[in-house]
Length: 130
Image 1 (cartoon, rainbow, N blue to C red):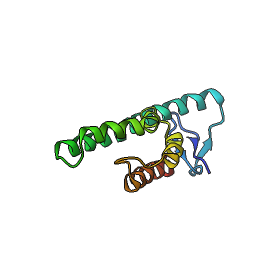
Image 2: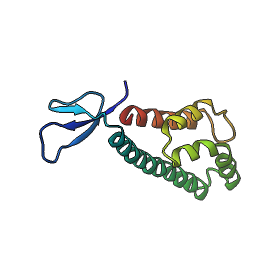
Image 3: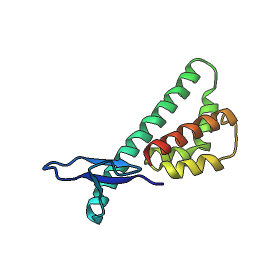
Image 4: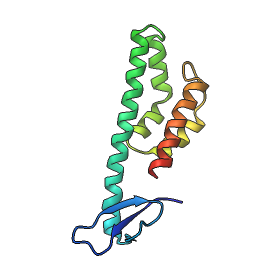
């Protein structure tokens, strides 16, 4: 079940929540224009979250180079291999990133452990935010 937006009833300045079910005293928002605005804001948040996650991933990759556990070539080839995945994350397209990572073949340092770690993070994000 997908989360929906709900607005607090009978309040001068009502709260809006994004949840799986309507909290007590809240009504589902059905106005198309308001929903568009709310989902646009949600995508701005998802984009920020994706950029934060990928920047953390790149930082770890750089530290692996500095620490000598991988080479610059390893990192370069990895970045080429996961380009579509990184694009999805950087633009906040978490559902597409989930599918992309699931279907991405193993290559170089993108091994099963890395794939599983990324998949777990994406799956958890989607569970908590969609």
